[in-house]
Amino acid sequence: MSLVISSLTLIAIFGILSVSLGLLTGHLGIFSMAHAALFGIGAYTSAFLTVKLQWDVLPALVVAVLVAGLAGAIMAIPSLRVTGDYFLVASFALQVVASSVFQNWRSVTGGTDGIPGILRPSVGPLEFFTEGAFLVLCLIAVVVVTAFTWFIVHSPFGRMLHVIRDDEMVAATMGKPIASTKVLVTVVSGGFAGAAGVLYGQYLMYISPGSFEVSTSVTIVTMIVVGGMTSVPGTLLGAAIITLIPEAFKFLQLPYSVAGPLQQVFFGLLLVVLMFVRPQGMFGELSQGQRWRRDRTNDATESVEVGENAA
Amino acid sequence: MTLFVQLVLNGLVAGSLYALMAAGLALILGATMHFHIAHAAVFASAGYLTYICTAFLGLHPALSALLAIAVAVLMGMGIVRFLYVPLTRRGGAGFILFLVSLGVLVVLDNIFTIGLGARPAKPGLGEWFGHVQQLGPWSLTWGQLLIILLSFGLVAGLIVCLEKTQAGKLVKAYSGNPEFFQLFGRKPMTVLLLVYAVGSFFGAIAGVYVAADTGMLPGLGEQFFIIAIMVVFIGGIGSVRGAFLAAMLLGVLQHVLLLWMGSEWTLAAVFIAFLALITISPQGLHKLSLPTRRRRLA
Image (cartoon, chains in turn red, purple):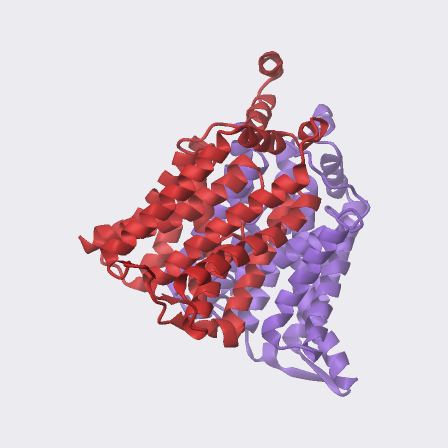
C-alpha cells in the first residue's frame, strides 16, 4: 500500500513537471533542456526559506513559485532571439549553470549535502504530514495544473500558441504579440515546475543537487515525448509510465548502482524505438509543420497532395 | 605574470581538447545540420574502451588507444548509417533526430556506467604521459604537449584536406547543396560516412586524452559536447577554422578566470558569457545567418 501511495505521489509531482514542459514544448515549440533547473530552483527556494530562515510554508511556496517563474522569464530571453538548436544549447547551458550553483553555493544550498529537515505543510486545521494526506495535496496540485493547462491549450490563446509554434512569421503577420506570449508561457511553465519542486522537497523532506541534474531534464523530456507532447493527457500519462518503470525495476532486486543506469538505458532505448515507430508519442498529433516536413521528404506526387490538403 | 602565462598554457591544453571535439562537430553540423549529441557518447566510449583494453585485457597502451579510437569511429559511422539515414528516409527531421541521438547517448553512457561503476575510468598510458617538461618558469606534461601538437596538426590537416583534396571538395559540395550533389550522380552516403568518421576520429582522440588525464566519468561527455557545440556556434556553423579559434579562446578564458574565481565557478561563468553573447548578438557571431532550414539526406 505504501508503495502505491509513494508511486502515486511521484507520478503527481512529475505529472506537474511533464504537463508544464508539454505546454512549453508541445504547444509553443520552445524545446527546453532546463526544466529540472526550474524544478530545483523551486525546491531550493522553498527549502532555504522554511528550513534556514524559518518561514511559514505558504509564503515560502509563493516566493518559490515566483522565483522559479522569474528564472523562467530569464530563460525566455534567449528564446526571443534564437530558435531551434540555438535555444536547445542555451537551455542546456542554463541547466549546467544551475546544477553547478546547486552544488557549489554552499551557504544557501548546502552543497552536495543538500538541505535536510524540510517540513510538510499544514494549512489551518488541515495537516498534510502523513503520506496519505500528502498524496491528496499532490493530487489536488496536479489536477489544478492539468486543468489549467488543458483550458489554456483549448482556448483561443492556445490556438495562438499553435500558430506561433508552427510559423512565427504567420503569427507576426496576424499581429499576435509573440515576444510577450513566449515570456508569459515560459513564466507560467517555470512557476509550475517550481511548485513541483516545492512539493518534491516536502515529500522527501530532503533535497540534494542529484535530483535536479541534466539527467532529470532528460527524464522529463522523455516523459513528454513518450506520452505525446501535444496532448495534455498524453504528457500526464507519459509521466506515469516513466515514473512507474523504476518502481517495476525495484522488483528485480538489483543493487542501486546497477538499477539506476539500467533504467536510463531503458529510457534511452525507448526514445530511439519511439522515434522510429511513433515519433509524435502515444497520444500526440503531428503538428502542421511536422506533417508537411514528413510528406515533403516522400516523393513529389505526395507533396502535391499535401499541398492541396493544406490549402 | 608567471601565473598568468601558466594559466594560458593550461588553457591551451583545454582549448586543444575543445578544438578536437568542435572541429569534428563543425564538420558534421556543417554538412548535415544533425544535432549530433551522441558525439558525446563517441568521445566517452573512446576513453572507456581504452581503459577496458589496458585494465582488463592487458593490452599495450598505444594499441589500446588505437583500438578504442577505431571502435569509436565505427560507432560514429554506425549511428549515421543505421539510425539517422533510415530515420530521415521515414521523414524524421531536426527534433526527432536529436531525440534519437539523445537516446543513443543515454544508452551508451549508462552501459559503461553499469559495467565499470561510477568511479573515474583512468587508463595508464605509460610513464611518459605524466612526465613534466620545464619550459623556463613554466611547465607542461608530455601528454599535454602531445595533445596540443595533435590538435594543431590535425585541425590544420583537416582544413588543408577540405580545401585541396577531392574528398574535401565532395564534403563542401554536399554541405552547400545536397540536392545538386545528388543530381550529379554522387552518393550522399559516402560523404555522410566520411564526415562522421573524421568527426568521430577527432572526438575519440580527445576522449582518450581526457580518460588518461583525469579519468572518464558519466556526464563528462555531455559537458565536453556542450562546450564544443557552443564553440561551433561562436565560430560559425561549418567553419572548422572558426571553431578552432573559438575553442582556444574559450579554453584560455576558462583557465584565466581562475585568477578571480574558484575552479567550480569557471565553467558556469563561461556558459553565462555564451548565453549573454547569443542573446545580445546571435547574428554577430559569424558571417552566416541563422540556418533554420534543415537539410535532408539520402
